[in-house]
Amino acid sequence: MHFVNPFKALRPSSEYVSEVAIPNIEYLTENTKRAQLRNNTWSYLNVFNAENNATAKQQFEVMKNKSIVSKDQENYFYLYRISNKKSTQIGIVGTAKLSSYHDFNIRGHEDIFLELAQTRLEQMDNLNAQIGPIYGVCPDNEDLKNLMNKESDKLPLYSFDALDECKHEMWIIKEQNKINKICKLFDKIERIYIADGHHRMEALLNLAETKKQQNINHTGTEPYNFFMVAVFPKSQVTIGSSSTTPRIENVISVADKGQTMPPKSTWFDPKPLDGLVAFDFE
Image (cartoon, helix red, strand yellow):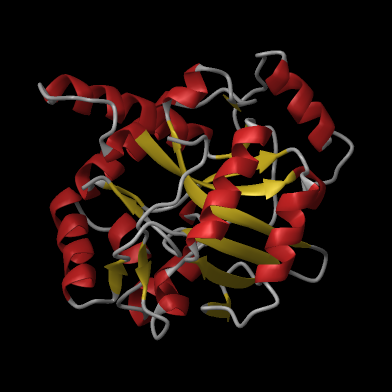
């Protein structure tokens, strides 16, 4: 098993991708939420904002049964580019072992609100899936950069403007030689910093421990031992700018020291969408 691994993503059909994938609901205005719920049947907002867990689960199952979203049959990496008027960033979506967080190969920099982490846990447990990736940052690597730039010259699988006023593009990396190369590159990098997703990480860690205790045949290779992460090179990541906002180097320094900032201290923009790719625990 590698540090970052390919996986079978649960993802929207090209026909519905712009309707399904949404920015993190914490950053959507109430007017936007109401408009989405009223006009867009297949938006993940209908899952996240459902009246109760049963309704959320039912909507999620309907989306799968109608092939609005479907699961790839093989393990792939997903190349993801996000661009707006100010910046462009391109990274890899894969999965990593949760144990890497305990081993300090994956490092956070913020404290969390326990209530929000619990909400995330309940949502993922109910759906048995992680709908949005952890947003990760890795040290720059020239070989990885060249590979991503070359792959992104091809026609993307997805290309659309989302509610965050950013253009989101995605490619699937299917060739085994390229998959192997990406795995080996991340094995050398061996470090990911959490930019956004500290509450999801806490939820995933707790959920995995619960599932482990419930599974008398636990081996450590079950899907719940992994999490989905979108990893972007440090030089491409944009952090909010103000007199009180730390620079990315400061954030990494805090993480390297094993220290933390208060919850929601940093604002990374743009961010990966929820639902563009998902990781189910089945």
